[in-house]
Amino acid sequence: METRRSMEVEQVRVEKPVQQRRDEYVVSLNQNPGGGGVVVGVKGNGIFLTWKDMWVTVPDKKGGRPAILQGVTGYVEPGAVLAIMGPSGCGKSTLLDTRAGRFGDNTRRTGEILINGHKQTLAFGTSAYATQDDTLMTTLTVKEAVYYSAELQLPDSMLRSEKRERADITIRDMGLQDSINTRIGGWSSKGLSGGQKRRVSICIEILTRPKLLFLDEPTSGLDSAASYHVMDRIVKLAKQEQRTVVASIHQPSSEVFDLFHNLCLLSSG
Ligand SMILES: Nc1ncnc2c1ncn2[C@@H]1O[C@H](COP(=O)(O)OP(=O)(O)OP(=O)(O)O)[C@@H](O)[C@H]1O
Ligand SMILES: [Mg+2]
Image 1 (cartoon, rainbow, N blue to C red):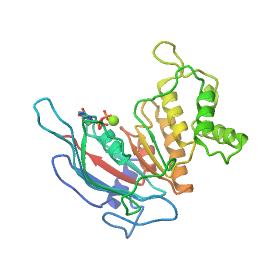
Image 2: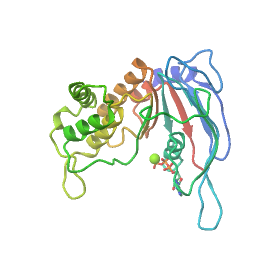
Image 3: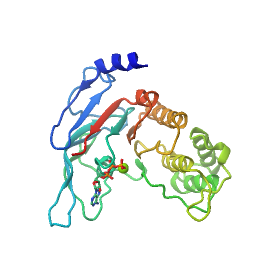
Image 4: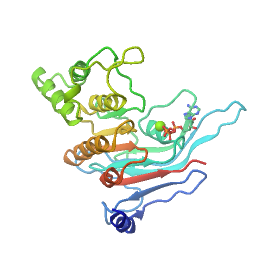
């Protein structure tokens, strides 16, 4: 395993290093030979997402505005999965939030985010974001939660049976078929495990097969086999249907790491 990794590392190409207090690199794991720098273009009907010189600041108690992200630049293309890695508190969730257009009231952002080379807002249903914290109705079972979401999110042009079929396929893809009738549960009533809840959250977000998918720590709480299963499914979804996926991840196993096409490394400091 060690030998294989070191051979791959030789092929890693640093696309655009930005060295500041927090360093960020986007490295291409040899999936895009001939490409270079920040890519702006259109591939099929997928989404190229690029971000340039992103700065995010928040106010502190002393009246200053420390920066959480400093001059972060990168891109992700259709059919590819970009992994964001770095230590806890380095700004992975902030980077995802910023690109997904989710801002806290107190945050200030500068920099450019382009979709297919243009500044534009995404149409409803084009992107989805599975956040780090699961926000699920604790009283519903897995089946109810996913079926309700399918009813609400999938277009009216789809028949109810088609919506249910999509929901069933997605539940199976996420390996939740055994706990389909289990209540999600919360702090007052135990239900699904932490890892299963994570998979329900992802399941609900990928129901609509969004063109752009943001996943904040999709594998937290999962063992290495379940992490591999979930990420493998997401990578296949990205490849087969030319979806664009950005996922933050903590300590992936070497098998999961091998699934990613591009890597964005953040350092705290
Ligand atoms: N709205 C905010 N106000 C104040 N500080 C913030 C805000 N948002 C983020 N931070 C700070 O910015 C830093 C980065 O937070 P972020 O949640 O992006 O980290 P992370 O890399 O996702 O960490 P983890 O791996 O633990 O989830 C943290 O130190 C956090 O306290
Ligand atoms: Mg986070």
